[in-house]
Image (cartoon, rainbow, N blue to C red; front, side):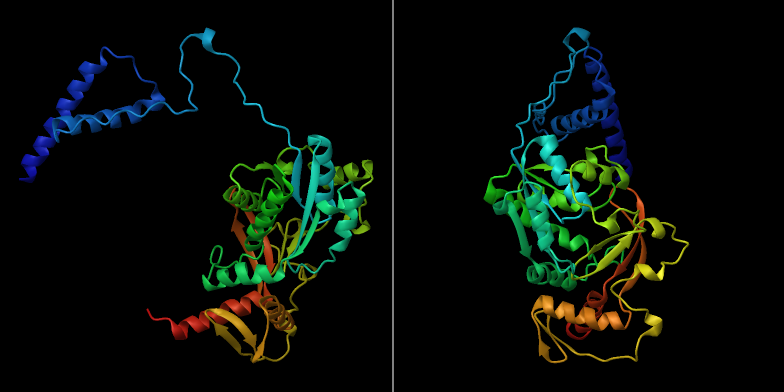
Length: 382
């Protein structure tokens, strides 16, 4: 039976090839780029007609963006680019630091547009009102400066669901930076719709993962929004060039920002991450001065026992005392700090194909993650 079936299929395929050869002898030769697809489509039609007595499937029409091929050079002209409308107003994710302050002025000069700033309080531990004053000084209208306290929303709607999912990047990293970007992107789009902006902008570089996080969030919530990523457009490729640009345009630069920083950091209520410069060689241990959220675990006090109460998978109390989501995470951060909990030295893979070494401090998040896993051990079946 199997031999007969194999012989039947073999003869069928030979017949197909003969038919195809006869037919194609009087047809134009397909280009190499479409030959495989053409063969698959023709063989599918052959099987439908001769084996299953079904009509051939019609070939799809040309893609709406495809242009007709021509072998004559007279029809080949310069590529036609669709004219883009000018950008009138852009919402910038703004921290008030050197990078985003330079971006603000660069947007005003390069695009001739009005800039709306958005600064998110995610528990990074910095005073945010100076960002407002700096934006006003740089010509942003007071009604177009948005500073929002997002700490409770960040923990309740982003950190807690992440903990319920036991989400770990590369099996170790608790996504401290990653999980905050969608919230910032969401607020930028909300503001863009409220003020009638036609573009959004961020300060992420072209080498890291943040550009992907921001821009996928933008497009998910507003597919037609235009995105300006200055680090992929401008020619300011060093800290010295940023400082020179700032000085040329009377942008204040803090004294501690003038020297070359030994590493860069990102912080929010969940974690602090450090990378670059002194951390680039994975053979070298992380210097003690890099750590900011955790004390040295070798000098930690005696072990301390705590209890956590959970409702519907989320923590609601520590040692019997109820807290709001943000306050609870802040309490766990205090406990984790003195015991040196939550340090992670990781060489990770970036989305763009690079490897990067980062040092992450997630004291409260580490306690919460392990406590949640403990609750799962007791309550979940196989």
